[in-house]
Amino acid sequence: MWKVDITKSVILDQALKMSSIQDLEGITIGSIAAELKMSKSRLFGKFLSKEFLQIEVLRSGFELF
Image 1 (tube, rainbow, N blue to C red):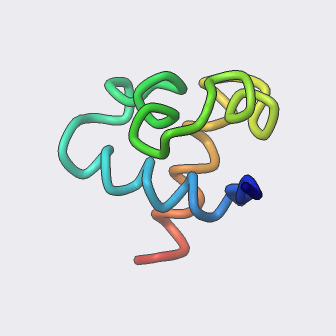
Image 2 (cartoon, helix red, strand yellow):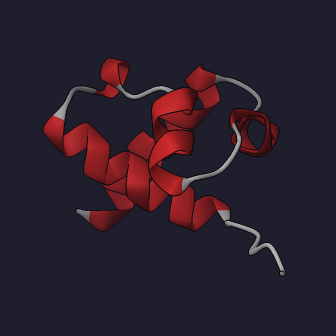
């Protein structure tokens, strides 16, 4: 079975959805990874830290609105 590579945009979409329910500090690499059914290390590899992930979520939200 092939594993689908989840792109940054898919991760950011999920993080935006989650941040609309809870605040930005409430979303974690672990919680997003669990929602997307991927490992934390794979998600961490795309953003390198929770802070970089949060910055990208803010940028995505800004572009959306």
